[in-house]
Length: 286
Image 1 (tube, rainbow, N blue to C red):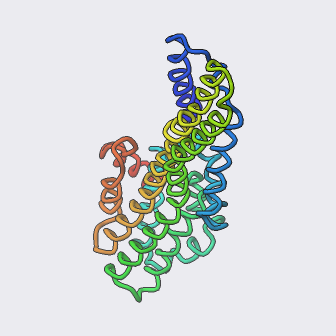
Image 2 (tube, rainbow, N blue to C red; image 1 turned 30 degrees about the horizontal axis):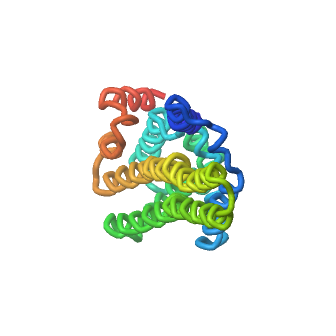
């Protein structure tokens, strides 16, 4: 929703300001130049990306219209789930978690936390490393290194749409210049026209530069920045799981291990120590 609000502000500011200074909006309506710039941008996007990157970008665009799911409620559920799992392992042994991590969709523990359970990638990340811990064949250093590699791979893969859109945004001003040059060439080829008509043709040509810059910095590049923000938020989930599991491996009690995980969260979503402590107490009482 904020994407549309931002676009409305951009359009109102640019075209409204132009109208207030006495400009004629009809002059800016140049569908042919818009076709040239947009078509060149789409073509360059297709040439510069493989099928996986193109499909990833197409799948990512609708997600930008929804609000972020990585809020405090999600993290409270995640840390409560981690506490329950680690407390069960501390009480009954790590082997007691086998049934839960082998079938998390039907686990009586996981079903209590639907916000986490409905994210298959997070569940896979959590259960995979719990499975490695249960095996007992890897130490904390090895698991931490493996987690870092997987998180880095996930981040690199998730940022592909952002990088693709950013490069298109960088190219659009140049495509705007191309459209403007084509318009100037057309105007100069009509040098026998009266000066008033020549001026109109040149004005139409200059709109290409304007459209290229507006599309780049007002519409496409902000989408790339938004994707980067969303990727950074999603990475925090994995970092929270990583820090919590490693703290438990290093001998900290489940309640303290969850506190370690709380510390890596952004301040806007991070629950206070008291909030987390009260939440953990409620979980313990259940």
